[in-house]
Image (cartoon, rainbow over the protein chains, first blue to last red):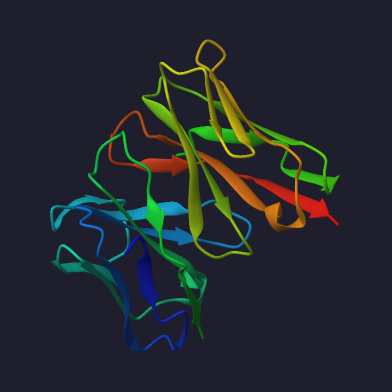
Length: 114
Length: 112
């Protein structure tokens, strides 16, 4: 299995809703990432997990809450989002959180906040 | 913060032609990576070139790296309509080795 699977593919949520994005990989990768991508912009790093521990939070607002239940799963819990949070959310993994590895990305979740 | 800047921002060519995209970066690097993204979906890792390498090939892709000029190029030979995508270079942020930072990207359109 050489894939990163993200669910759901599309999500529409209201500003008072609570929802979660899920990401799964079975490649034995020990680093997992969340990126946010707005239209016609490059992906921007949100969080880095290394060996199931949060190692980087890029000053992301607390309405985004990451969770890594085990080495194969990464969640992003969403609460009280704003319309400007609408974007493509990408999950990625790599063998290690180190400089010598390429990332494997999921297909993303297209989030719309209404 | 962005480390890489791609050039051109957009490129339109005919099938069969070669496409060249350039990436410039600001600080020293351990490696530079190229990714492809189709229609706003997930990114696909194409090539990783280390700082001590000058050229690398993968199928129809050729990547060069010039650390003295802090630049890299991605050449796609004999392009196909299926190569239509956005291409990003990425480097690790010099302030934190775990942070892979993407350039603005080049949107390539290959016309049949």
